[in-house]
Image 1 (tube, rainbow, N blue to C red):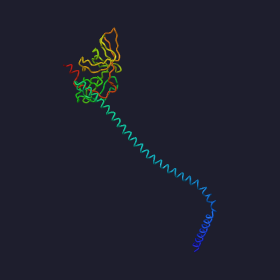
Image 2: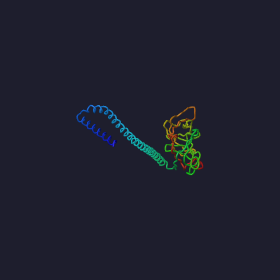
Image 3: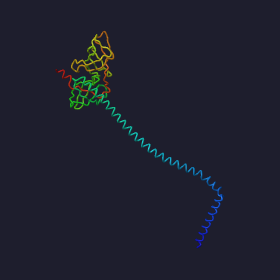
Image 4: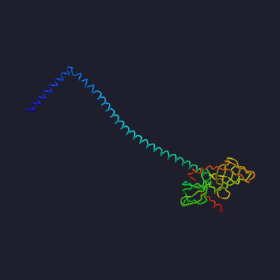
Length: 275
């Protein structure tokens, strides 16, 4: 009973206070208090609103960043795919150019049976100027066979394995090729020289040889077919007191960048020598 009476008193008191406050509010007497409360609450509410806005912006930025990263990753994949395709197309284009050159060379030399081969190695010491190709005895390659490209003479087969062969370049110091000047038909011997150079020696004095003359294989001695391009004259050295003159020759073949060559299967020095 005592507890119920206390609750009743509290409820009546709260009701009276509520009615009093309502009356004061209706009469405008709480306006100073309301202004004072709003004065303190408004900045806090603004900061709260700004904080909420910034938090929402941060969350949106994180979401946008995730999307951006996905887009960048996708663009990188597309870039890599395009790069790989570009490389493939360039290699295919280069291969087509090589094949067209080889076909043109075969048509210009129908008497030669040519076997395309890939360069797979070089002499690392550069003491012996040699190349390693991916064709060997199983493909019909034999020692002393001639090796060419559509740009000119490369050398001869030096050693042969079952599926590989070593090519001795004409720029090696042990190499010599009987040659002639295409224009004047003057003959001499083209030899490898220091630094991978070519020198045509034993050109008789009085024979005409000038800069830009083309030098071909002469066919003398039977080591090489006649008429293969060796290179072009870049310098002529003459001395009246000597029996011969000599010329510096620049090969059109870039021996350092050779990737494919042609092996002449139906001509070898040993076969011609036995005829």
